[in-house]
Length: 451
Image (cartoon, rainbow, N blue to C red; front, side, top):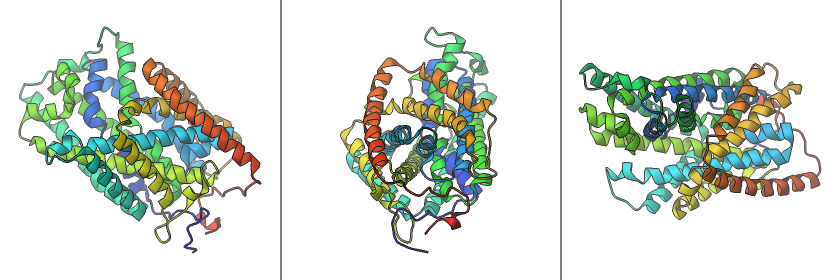
């Protein structure tokens, strides 16, 4: 096989179903669950498990669309590639740009989170120094190979799940000894909102805790049998994450007063403090693992997305270069890491972070509608096919959730989208002016590609 690093070389197919399952589970069970429970409680009341369950249902609708498209077109590039096929390079660029913006900002925010309060339980180091070293280490692991990265993710995911299991056990123990209040589990409504409005408000925040599954489509090309593995891993991981989240929500709400959860920046630590018996520093360590794992997986997504967009002619071709031997997209890794470092150092992450959900809802709406448009293309034989009603409901769910996002966030999100539209129009003109390129082979058997 050729070891040149030109963009025509395929990526290594190293992911099995279990590795892909842990990849998705680790990305969904990221740092968000350690801080979001309190914010959901502030918006919805004590019955935090209700918006969590609602968010799972909404996420599964869009996940069905991703399962169809990832098995139909198993390539790096994900949403950008699918939307390009359905609507052309301009829309594909906008979708990819939104994903890239969300991913890069997310990694930067997680780097700052890693350098913050959880780390201060062990050492006091300048945020800038920690963020740069943290991102550099993640980039090196990413460049080393998808197999090494996902194996590290398996260990980290087990630690994350173990930490959440501790919360569930401690919550049960508090109830058994009579210190909790199970009556809080049926109380919906906060801030003068009715039950339905409270569930929807809480579901927007809870929805953010489920996103992450979309990053996995960017490693479909590195999965050994995506037609068989991807749907099983995707739905299995989401179901596992949903069950864990609901149990954690029940345990936290029953164990700790709603007002205490709502005002705490570390709501799960309130459960640890209330129950006793588990050192607080231990949970800080678990949270650091969760943050690092989320940043690693989001960094993998961002680099693979940039690589796939470069192959589609939507970004400079240099981003499609693959490291000899390791066969990882080293230029894309370097560029996305550098941008995350810049955001982490400038402190602009907080301004952009609140737009992440809105940007992802734009992408999810395009992906759900792209499924229906692409039904005329047979794609890879034997791919997963979602019932037509699911992408329709998925698109509608994006619209409903978008109506719950504040106007200030819309203003920032529309600015990011405007930049994407301008750059997308420029990319579409450049691509239209070039000679037609050969169609890439999207079949599962990578042997038909030129190496």
